[in-house]
Length: 463
Image 1 (tube, rainbow, N blue to C red):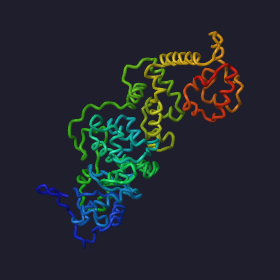
Image 2 (image 1 turned 180 degrees about the horizontal axis):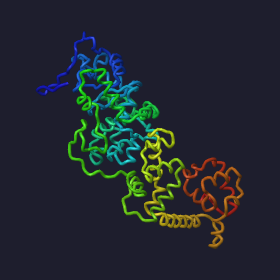
Image 3 (image 1 turned 135 degrees about the horizontal axis):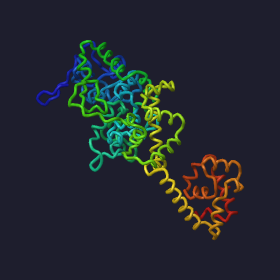
Image 4 (image 1 turned 30 degrees about the vertical axis):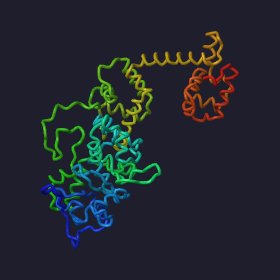
């Protein structure tokens, strides 16, 4: 498509041309044959939907022959992904080729791993959070305006929503899953069809996307380049790289064709390249200097991770090993190592753990004890405790074993670290949601506890 004197001129073919596409089924067949196909013409002759269709059929609103309407049909096809994947412009990628495409575009990074290396702009991170991703990057489907609102873009919030959305599509983290209308209160559709978005993992599953991680991103690029040259022998590598290439996060000084746009600045070491534990502190979002108490707190929360997470964390940040080397140690894929690291960092950042290394281990223990004593004091005022302070302390220290509860209820409490009467009262004071997290307790168990505690003069209804 060219613009001449302010008018769009479509570059198409004649209806009787052997390569002319007449139906969305014809287009699907071509996409699956090539593997990927831009919507509009570009620097590679013949490599577009536009050049294989009749110019007069565009924007006629006839789904039978309008290529612009075909994109709405094929975006939801189980064998095809649609999105801005070609030099920030729209096009299609087949399910079979998407893992190869994504491995090159993501540079081998899952989104969590990209965040872990601090390579994601804040607005992109907020936009991806709107899709409520789980550990396998599966999430919900959102209309574009819903994603914009949920991620906080707008007049008084984040800026450049379209730019962030396009970047995430170019990096193969988001695709257009279909086109939907807005709905009124009666559930009836109205207005223009709007793009719906989701992650490719949501459409095809994490394992399908991860299958492309078995090779290096550069190998994936070579396969893509060879496929384009096989289907379009006249294609020049420079034009293909401009159309299909990408500037990786962290390489702001390079153009898509590999030439330096500006002299590169002195490289700032990434967290895993820094001395230990400074690098791990940096990955957790803290800046030096760090006290011994903070370091002790960091070691304490690391011990709360599972064995595999601790080992991988130390190999990456203390031994400075490459992901591929760590993967060989365990005999698993490098992407799985990235996922383990991302999960470990996510766990360490949880609020109930972060205090130990942000405030310091000893300081946090003192604060928690003070809060516990303060809470216990409030509970004693609200429940029917003995007036004598010594008797109160003895009562609060009563072991769960000595409360006369059934074995099932006793074991359920002990598994949650509830060892005495004070812990038990604090649990009930936290409300129903706090109680429901105790496995195998249930309504009957809660009723049993209330009944037993009445014999100790404790009325849980007052808590």
